[in-house]
Image (cartoon, rainbow over all chains, first blue to last red; front, top):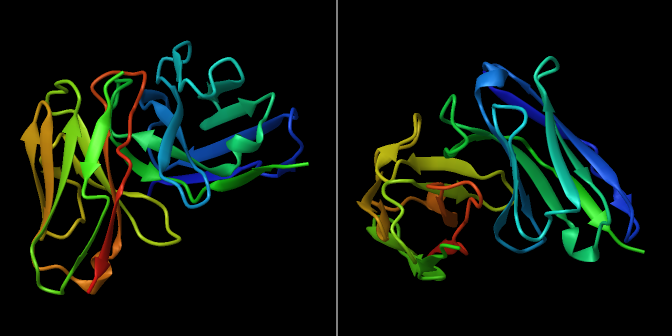
Amino acid sequence: EVQLLESGGDLVQPGGSLRLSCAASGFTFNTHSMTWVRQAPGKGLEWVATASYITESTYYGDSVRGRFTVSRDNSKNTVYLQMNSLRTEDTATYYCAKNNVPGSSRGALDFWGQGTVVTVSS
Amino acid sequence: DIQMTQSPSSLSASVGDRVTITCRASQGIGYYLAWYQQKPGKVPKLLIYGATNLQSGVPSRFSASGSETDFTLTINSLQPDDVATYYCQRYNTVPPLTFGQGTRLEIK
């Protein structure tokens, strides 16, 4: 059974930093790209970042590029999202999700974690 | 960037109705389109991938069609459990993985 467990969400002040983690199990982690998606309160889904199954390849949405860093540790079956220079508009539930096509950076998101809440406020 | 536009933004239908939601891409994306269902307070769930392929475990009353720029999600015989917001998402290129703005479905 595929499981994705996010952690690290918290209340942080504007300008602060936070690192989210997503521990994966139930599938061959190192063959699947992993994606972070966020959802601000009452809003739609926004793609944040993707860590390719090839660990050196990462991709970012325009609103987070230069501030967020996605990485993965295939030995720990974990993907991370380092968030720096946080803004109030980064307040959201952050989901990690598994791409459904092994060996590709493209793919639909077939399994999602329960999400972790990040609140940026003074 | 390719934009994804869903219509309608919201709709209300009766139990047993056939419901259609549309997603339009500003440029051709082939069959690289997914549909997700997000029930209130819940995690998004993959319904359709590759524009027309039903994800395992999804009821057969859900179906989808389309390619390149025009896509539809159809729910045959609407059930109360189908109350949710539905999102399309393109994944023909990375980056970005663009979502539509969502369609909120309610029961009359």
